Length: 286
Figure 1: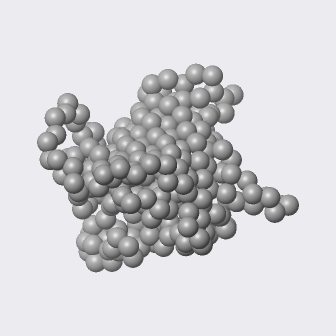
Figure 2: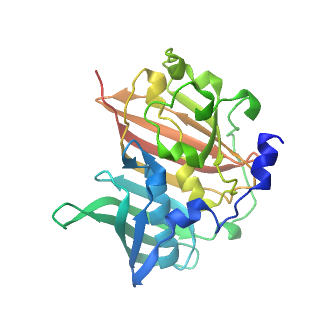
Figure 3: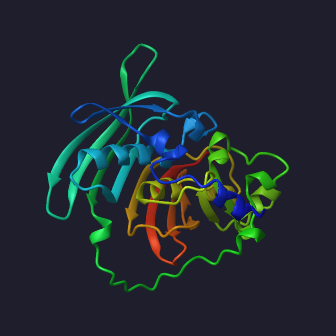
């Protein structure tokens, strides 16, 4: 049986998958949600920023009258750890087509004091109600067929900086962006990959929030290694993705002062640009 057929035979569904279970929040009281952040989405010991954004996105989708994130901007204040967390939401404004809210995720320090980990501001609407008119000069990234690309399982050793999260993803990286894994980074600051969830779950707007922050950092292709923590991340969700794997392209044009930007595009199997993002991240030089 082929890899694709094997995934199809065991495919999880939206609402009944590891991603759904691990991003599920429990309403404690109006505007307050509890969650146990899963260790399955960690990079080294910190929880992945895209997974965290999906957690907050799910809470806001419950708190607001509209369920689909259109734009969500997050500031990462301190590194989140696996374990209990509290999400507090606030409805800022509600309208006929868009609603705006904010949310923060808190954990507790060793003395039992609340520490804010991440704060977001977002606008939600109904992606299904958008008109079909598309006028664009954007084109899908040129990525070789999946069978010609490589994932973490294809290497002789774990990808530097990777950990539990790689077991939950289907990543097939473009060989042209894998120079860093062979000790010869290109210096171009590009990363491209086929992307999916390992259990075969199809994508929805919430999983797009994960997709923009799930690839190895472009800093690797710039000849840098180690953790590249996100300072700020803004995601625009443009459409509900069609079933099937996504293609993610991330580029960095400017590393200066110990910070770089990553611009991401996410394309679905119908060749539609379904999400865009920009993040500012810190790098360790020298």
